[in-house]
Length: 567
Image (cartoon, rainbow, N blue to C red):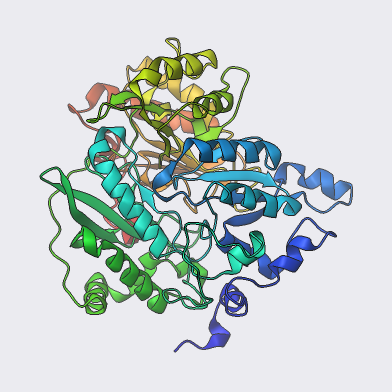
């Protein structure tokens, strides 16, 4: 048993929190400051929110002897990324009324609101609760939003796989009534069973760290399942969902200067029928609950537990807790981890439209009024909006009679049109929020990547690579929220205007990249990538992806496991 004196600070906060209540009510009601009490900044994550400051204004506010401009990011839970038109409209309303006027579509297939003031937290949460959405477990040391492949080409299986994602999400949602008590005046969510203040799966101190689950439908790995604590590969038999291959132990984060921290891809351990998958997920969560590191949060993810005890020992414990053996993994193939864009017709005759959303930011600009356009579509659309794991959007299950109207609205606001020609590099790009609100960021990402892509696009076009899908991903710090270590080109911020460049990931999300150059500014990035892209255009093999090419040419060695990521 762990000596309590050796536990991390957050473990003590959770233990004393009375199932995630702490002093959150008093914190939120305190009018003296825009911030929460220090312990409550840990607890509010479990309720789906992070306390942040506007770092652009730090020095000016210090000069004026004002506290930092505190605000809150709220991350809504949207299992499988599927939202109704009514839910889309409500999130749009809340962004205007309480947040910064924009919606962020995240790499975990959900909505984030940014810039919510402390006094507006209850009204905002009540606002999306009214359309049957919540933010409990949006963040924190629990299972977070469950991802599900959104690719419209696989619409036949999508409903079955999405149903499983909802079942897993519901089963692993914390049972505490604190969320309803604090934010909803004790009213129970309409889709949630009445809960007692006990946590039969998590226990009173929940998990040692965050936990992530994703499902994908081959040949599309559009949720990057191997970057998750649990990755589930849907296996189809005779046109129906037979079950899932299970992978365990993925995670993206690391810390600069600590080579014993590393990104890691999940290991495939076998196949389970659909009826058993919720049970398997629960038992994996309980092993991590019992075996995970609660002393040092830098080593608290499942990936480190797995490497400490060994895969064989972990699987043996899992099968003992299940009371049955997992079957051998079944054959499958992934071709890509990117999204599809444009129109697709499903087997039922309904239409799906894949839309690019740069940086996942739904906003209006002078040239493109994306937010207004999607709001107008939501007013007549009878299907759903599918958020993708790549920060894009699928307007799904469109009635054929609505196609012309959807196209007219999107064209009128500059979202679609014959003159809009983006490179495949830009279409596959991911960026985290980073500055100005993320407290962990060393550098820009979402605000800066489009500018860098303007220069890279010129290189790409000059070498005839405009349609060559190359995955580029940028984050403002090494924690990996935009999965940079799965980018064929990965850029990780190390200081303002300076990035480490990683190369060599698999286009299908099945191999990590490796460090190529450190501390590059924009000219340095362009200078390093230009000759590599030129060589790729000239010497690549038929169908060879950029990540495979740089390894074959010897520019970087292949990363075969997280533990040799730094080698």
